[in-house]
Length: 136
Image: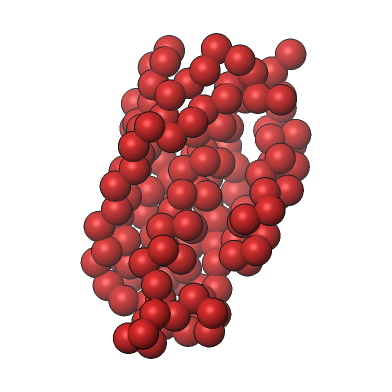
């Protein structure tokens, strides 16, 4: 039995690393997700800007949510990110993940990380391997 979106949302909300990072799921549809995170003091690098790893973590969480939204176990094969603008403490970042191509065994996603006012912070692309098993 394939999990419904409500059960998938529960799985995503229980992700320990996402909770640690303060990442919140805002929206989930098949092939799409929208997540948010506020940059905290602990997420700053030595330039006093948001660490790239924190931004990548938000993008990765959105990628995981969207790619598993079909109820089929999906695991990252590759993910790239391009940082376009700095983020600073207190900024709320929003990551949206869009399914670009869905195949039987692989799928391609585009992830945009933006500020609340729409400024592009990072653009990412990811490919997943879709296992034959349903999300448990």
